[in-house]
Length: 88
Image (cartoon, rainbow, N blue to C red):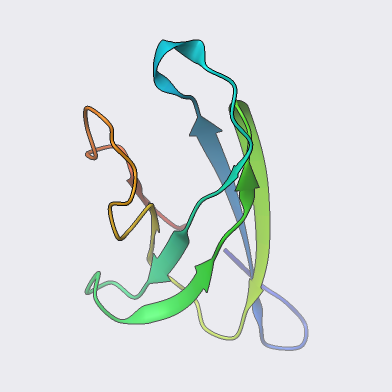
């Protein structure tokens, strides 16, 4: 994340999305940004994701430490281990 002149933070996330079997999709998926405790919510967004790399840009009042894609586990997938990433 980068501190802006007005004191807010710009967060840019590159989210790689795919659907099992290569099926096409175009969906709103929850992305939660948390403080370092992984519990205190800083922001919840629902960007539209498509197959491939999706660039998501958010302007926030507080600096998040981690981002979690599908934080409430609404999608069926083999592994959720790659759904959380550190925000730098």
